[in-house]
Image 1: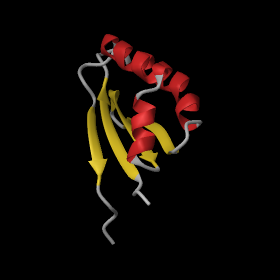
Image 2: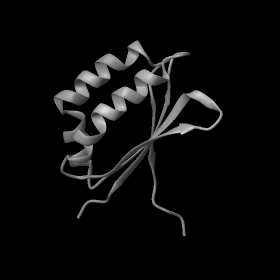
Image 3: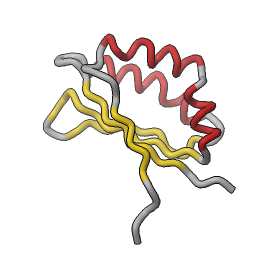
Amino acid sequence: MSEQLKLVILIQTKPGQAAEQIAAFTQLAPLVRAEAGCLQYEMHPIAGDENKFVLIETWTSQAALDAHDAMPYMIEADANSPSFRAGPATVLFLGPVIA
């Protein structure tokens, strides 16, 4: 059995364009959460900086994450995100929990 994947994605929007990021997430969230293998998909604002967000994702497997990345709505979202993001998102793959 493959191990779950947990990702933390750091997002920064262009000044004054946080609403576009929130709208994009709000549109995608129900679609992503309905995907096979999605265990968690949530975005949080960073306190004190209206242009920064953290997206937390948990997937059952690498195959589930790969299928997610290939979804047409994700490809479209990735193509549109430079219009409101300050740069590419930083994707961090987390290791196992340390006891």
